[in-house]
Amino acid sequence: MISFEEARESVVDHASKLGTETLRLNRLLGRYLAEPLIAQTDIPLFDNSAVDGFGVRLQDVANASENSPTQLSLAGTISAGDPGDMGLSQGQTIKILTGATVPADVEAIVMREFCQEQNGHVLVKQPAQASENIRRRGGEFAHGQTVLHPGTRITPAVLGLIATLGYDKATVYRKPRVAVIVTGNELLSPGMELTPGKIYDSNSYALRAALVSHGVEKCSVMHTADDLASTKTTLQQALAKADIVISTGGVSVGDFDFVKDAAEQIDFQTIFWRIALKPGKPVYFGKLGNKLLFGLPGNPVSVLVTFHQLVKPALLKMMGAESTDAKLFPARLTKPLKKKAGRMEFVRGVVRTENNQLVVHPTIGQDSHMLGGLAQANCLIYFAKDSESLQSGDQVQVELLEWSAN
Ligand code: AMP
Ligand code: MG
Image 1 (tube, helix red, strand yellow):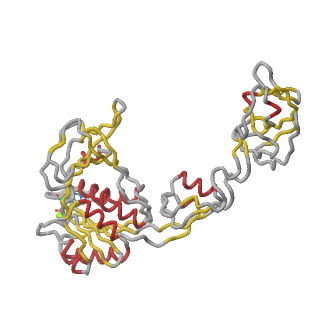
Image 2 (cartoon, rainbow, N blue to C red):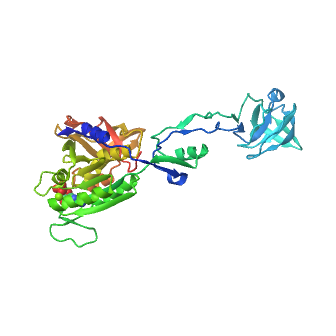
Image 3 (cartoon, protein in one colour):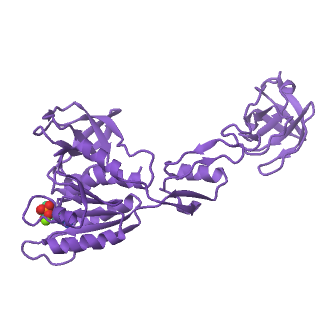
């Protein structure tokens, strides 16, 4: 059995970036850039005002104060969008609004809160510092500078920046097509009447939702009976339409577990099977060409935890993310935890801030069939492979269960 860390690393090594496509701005959210984006001009492109105020020459207002304001004559107004090609002579001021061009003669802008406008004159009640309230040309990015690097996730802020740079489209990695195969003769769809021995299929819904919330758009769900021939046929059909196939159930050591055999018989290379991990010990990972197969366990909690820990890094790598690392942070455990040494365990928890400290409460219902404990949780607590106990008050590492790619 390989360790969880080895399994995760191996998944990332075997996943490869998909092809690219060029999309318009409104379709870029959540994608990863496949090209650097370079400033096509200086940004800002021209000196402009950070405030609503009055443009001055420093010397004119050097002695201005609340009690003895300096009077300047108002030479004009420049508002946002105006070219602003005006001169400023000694003793004059120009009203300049936020975002408006600042002419070369203007050395600083005094906020309108410190000025009083009356009859074509302005009383300035404060001296000014050079460049005060002026956003200088090129102050953020210089023409030709690389602003965004390949692998950057396109968040709302990044999207805004791409627009600021003047690009109306960008080249990003395409999204993986995923096929989910649900195994299990005991399964019925929600809404149907349960007959003896049957349960409702929850995995197909939960897994599909996890995929969709990670940006997967093309996801088909297939069902197979627990026999080798059907499992093989379904796998082949799934392969024809997907970059990643994810099965649930049928991957353990039971008499009706056929995923691994079926995969090997249709020439998948087994990269690993079984991980020193709880939940998620039976996970199978195989590869055929560039296509990946994750044989996830059947238990619903194991499905989502292993999705989060193993499938998600593969999705990120394929979608071109710069980093697939988990983001861990420390929190204080509120309850002791026990386990046997030998398997890394992900305990479902609720992390929150109490008295300015992050604390984490393990949820009730930690067995791998108990979705209730995961449904309440917002994080996974890392319980190291060879550790047997954690005490209340111990600092533990937690990872947020964010159902989105990041
Ligand atoms: P298996 O790995 O196929 O032996 O399944 C392990 C456990 O997960 C069994 O109790 C199954 O009934 C349950 N299980 C498998 N698939 C599903 C599913 N799609 N929805 C809910 N429970 C499932
Ligand atoms: Mg089964």
